[in-house]
Amino acid sequence: MTPQRLLLAVGLPLGLLVVFLSPAWTGYDEFTHFARVVDIAQGNLEPASTPEGIGSLIPEAHREATGQIILDHQQGRTPWTLSSIRALLEHRPTGSVAFVDTRPTSASTPVAYLAAAGGAAIPVSVDASGLLVLWAGRFTSLLAYLALAWWSIRNAAAFRWTIVAASLVPLNLALASSVTPDGLTVAAVLVAFSLWTRVEADETVSTSGLIIPMLLLAMAKPPYFLVLGLFLFAPFTHRTKPRIRAAVVAGSALSVGLITTLVRSSENYQAATTTMIKQIQYQPSLQWERLVGDLPSFLWASVDTWISEYRFYVQNWFRQLGFWQADLPAFVPWLMIGLVLLALIRLDGEELAALSGARRALMGGGVALLLVALYAASYVYFTDLAEYRHIGLQMARYSAPLAVLAFVAWTPRTLGPLARRMSRRSAIAVVASAPVVSVGASVVTWLATGANTPMG
Image 1 (cartoon, one colour):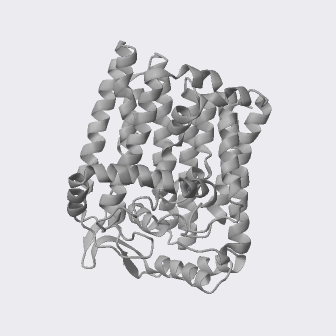
Image 2: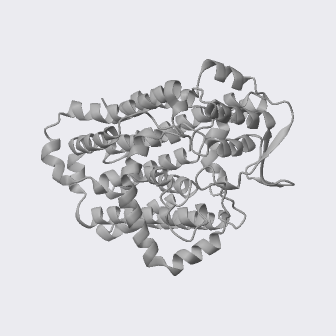
Image 3: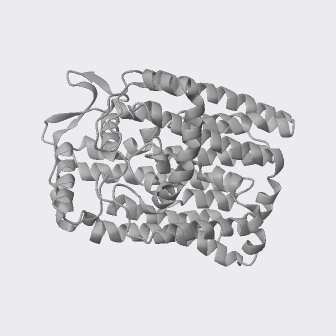
């Protein structure tokens, strides 16, 4: 089976399960992103200034439907049943509207929401229930993600199986199958990485073939546009005209991403929560002053947080596909990571071995710096504390888009002899089975036991 076929054979059915069986509006911050998507589908690309504040006006029925989801959970009912679905379908717009503070979505440009908004446009125009709008947005988001991931694999000059594995990381697949800018961001990173493999192979890439993927990443969720820094170092390892041209385009796209981030991260931005429950007092300028004034302590806190909390991230990558955590033994995610790494060494072993020396060190160090940047963004934009104890709160989700780079740069080459004992067929089966087991466990949780697990 080719990598592209495996992506579709596994990713499409599992993604559809998440689209239709994941309880409504229980993806990460999904209702806030949903409100932004509805607003865009109504023709408003940006949150507007209203008497209630800066945000979006959406049908009141959609807000009422989310209240029902919360009530079901609080009363201990299984979150997703035919009766609950029928009840949600009855919440259809009647003309009254509700204000939703969508400033937390303003960090991402409208580009990150276009796939979901395109799917939501028709049901919004006919005043369909919020559930149908949500399903349509989730479905088109999934299709866009799989299309970009497929394109990445098809056009990559190396590491095709690694791209497949990163695409099918359960959390990445869940983000792609919900209404959020994160799914397109993951796909944009995959596209950029695929382009980088071609540049590294000294293949000819058209100017448009450089500009479009790089701008896509620059306009996605910040600060992932920093991945484009890979292209800036390409001419240093092997100086050729195609590499220099790619570096120039990447530098321009980086500038676009940086300017866009600075413009959109204004004092008007209001992060809604720190823990999905606690309202915070947004104060980015103060947090930034604290961080810069105590940079050594922050760097140490980032390293310490990653090391001490990594075990939680591993669980979240495989078990936390939204607000409900799957009832899966804790050792299973660790087992899956180990087996997937062995499988990738077996499938992409020669290419992994060829990436060595300065090229590998630059990528590995770049991933580490990106993680620090994500910790910094979390501190500046999502906390109001002087200390750093909350900077890793959502790091599992924030680090997941970097999976393809981490697999390539950090996979231990010393596992080569052990990996070679695995047959090629077994390795492919491992890459396919990890997301199947994880999503399958989540589906069971959603349909049977989800009401007994914490929502947060």
